[in-house]
Image 1 (cartoon, rainbow, N blue to C red):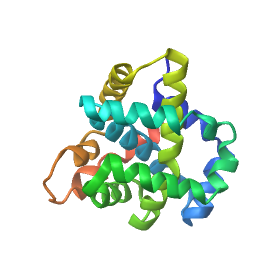
Image 2: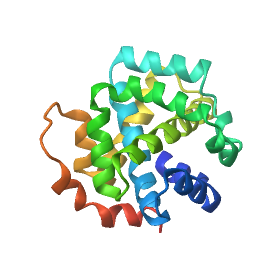
Image 3: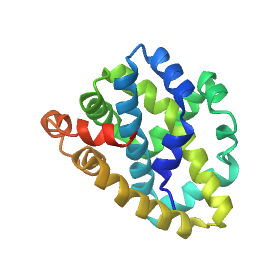
Amino acid sequence: MPTLVQVLLGTLGPTALHQVSNRLKADEGATQRAIGAAIPLIISALGKNAATPEGAQALNRALETKHDGSVLHNVDDALANPALAGDGAAILKHVLGDKRQSVEKGLSAASGIDAASAAQLLDMLAPLVMGQVGLQKRAQGLDADGIAGLLGSERTEAKGLLGRLIDIIDTDDDGSIVDDVLNMGSKLGKLFR
């Protein structure tokens, strides 16, 4: 069974990549690397939040009330809608909290896009990730514990893909992570092959 990362990367076809790249004013290669890192980062952050009973319940409520997966019915239109970024910022406020700036810097260093573009990309992708989790919830009939289990296993997969970049979410240490994440470029490129 494909992982959430694989499904989402498959959903973002060439048109979406071109559209996102134009919006970020970044080249498509860097945008592709950034997307390949951002999706596992968001999934990992959701998994960390869902690891507590309170976090799993809050996520389950959000999936039941707002994130049913309909955003994925037409990804190109969704990406063109400015309201998507507002939803994404709200999602990321909950799942990243005060780690957001560190995540943006790490994503920038790993992909080659600037930190402002990394922030914009995270805002665009967070609702798509939530939509995919919402689809899985409905398809598998998952409750809060089931969502926690799904995201826990997906988080392990994401950590395997991105190594140290995922650790930004888990640590309170604000030391430099640039050297660590620059070594991940080859892994990010492999996600799209």
